[in-house]
Length: 348
Image 1: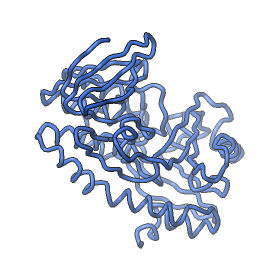
Image 2: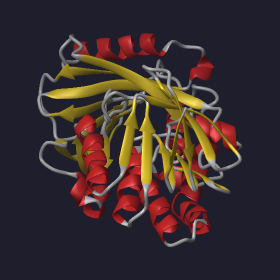
Image 3: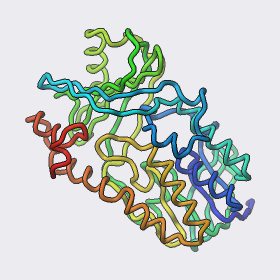
Image 4: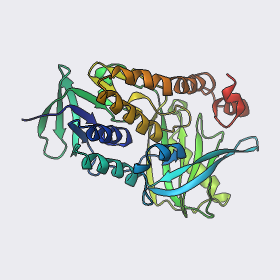
């Protein structure tokens, strides 16, 4: 059994994990990232939008290949016939290239990556057990800190304390657009329970998907089929899927993110928004904040900064989901109170 040492072991090489690896390695820390994927960034499991503020703070993560399209607004089609527009400047990414770019920056600054490797367990708060997926080789890693960046169903979170138990489920296809658009397009429908449908444009193509609460007992693929049928009928998209994906969104808000020598970032820590599902920017920010606290030898500062930056926002969304989205009727009232484009969301 192989044995290795590192200062920081990061489980998960997505935006959260690789951002933390990049910042830590740049600061001189010895970092090892483990991920089950063959290539960082693939397959893509999200709608790929990030707000423009992320570019202003982490411009080195962006280039013309990473950005598929700039967008300006978010247009909402409601069940009661109102069309609501809100400013939402940002980018729809080529997410696989975005993730890969951050990972390259981490490697260039000295971080090591171990792919096709899964995190199995840890003990004594200093030894992790890894396993190579293909060879089944077991590897012991002695670490000073363990960072869980392993997504919404985080094994690191589960083994270290409380973990997310309530999720939304998503299904998405990439299709050709009938007409290019500069905007994100959101649809609220009675057949998309406690969620919404989206068109996120990427030039002549778009990510088209739905996110629902599985507690309603409705198959997400059937909901996607109905949504695509509506969009084809109304002339938004072509009726041919070029790519399919889907995933899980944590819907409970922020967890306890500092647990002794274990830290959680990104979806593993509940940083994803429980209603909109927005998670890329929060993942990058949480990874950066975590790395800064570690480099300053003040890990406890990460818990405080995470609470100050995200705690109230995510709690508000989680509470609104619990209060208003357990039923899917009286849609105008429920949607106005649970979606950020409406003033009612901010009134209480």
